[in-house]
Image (cartoon, rainbow, N blue to C red; front, side):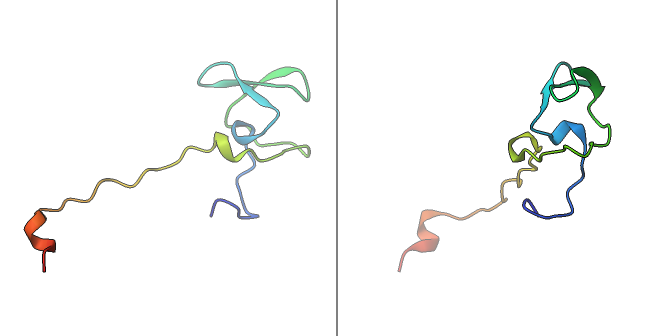
Length: 70
């Protein structure tokens, strides 16, 4: 769930973290560089826009326009 209370508290999903590289982030709260997958601190604030979204693959269909005419 997107709005679940049981989200993984990792620094890569925190509002106070800024991306520096693929493996490191800068924490504006503590003013230091931290790994992306480090466990979040007590001041963790979830940012929904930083979550990687898995897209649904396109459906494989062979429908024609004639299939939908009455």
